[in-house]
Length: 164
Image (cartoon, rainbow, N blue to C red; front, side, top):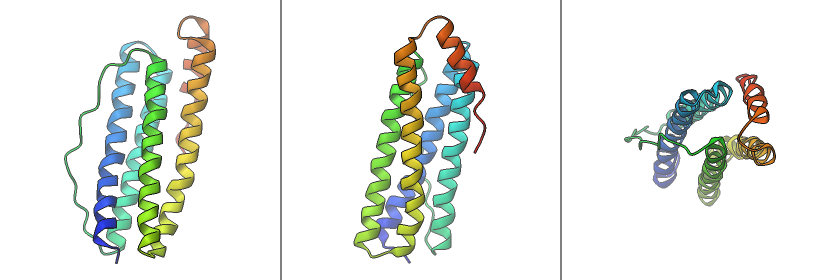
């Protein structure tokens, strides 16, 4: 059984993962509205990943004999200035999620909760990938700009992302 503090923080993490899904769906909706279907596709797949992350926490809590408690999910913003703005916010958000995962890991270490540490290792590695992916797209946007053929080509590239 995990400590009450770690259980509470993992329940909060479910909320944060679901918020992440909402945020990426909001970005997808914005991208669809401004005729960037590749960006929308990338964001929808990202939203699906975040839902999977929430379910991993859900299942882990249940498997450890804890109680899942779901709280209201904050509404994300719905308008974005540009694709660059979306990916700046994406990277910033992923960095925030990374800090949350590190916090959970620190609690698990302090509690000598080895099962939680093993579980959280997957998320530590996942966040390295999440930040790298968002950062790469962000840097590409900074290099090519947000107008013209380069943006259209990047949109098409993002449309080729497949679910993992």
